[in-house]
Length: 137
Image 1 (cartoon, helix red, strand yellow):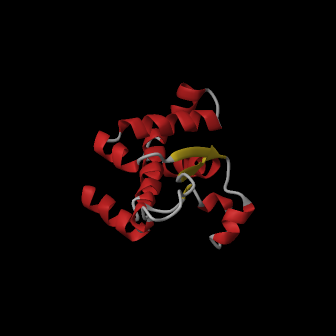
Image 2 (cartoon, rainbow, N blue to C red):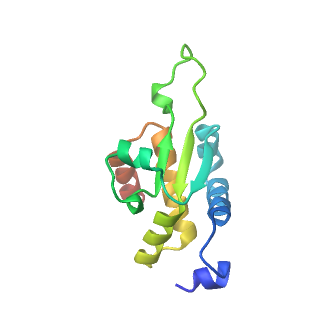
């Protein structure tokens, strides 16, 4: 677990996590990135109170990421132009999960959360995403 000290010198900042998310997205297969389209990514320390309440969550450390938007399966050319789809990554819960896990690098965890949320952009449920991850090994 020497990664934070050797790589960042301190706890990774919002900008550090944003850079990891950008690198994770760029490392995905080109076809996957193309299908994802114009999803915007934002990194915050935690989800806001309104988001947590809407999800029925009390502990802000329970939410590492969130997809916000109309998923691709629900869009229609007849619909007005929707707001851009957004993936939110939450730094403190990600760092907490990473520190507790010890089995994955921070880069791997950020990539996992990012891909999970993009899966929701594609219209996949948590169960669908879990099944795909289990099949992938």
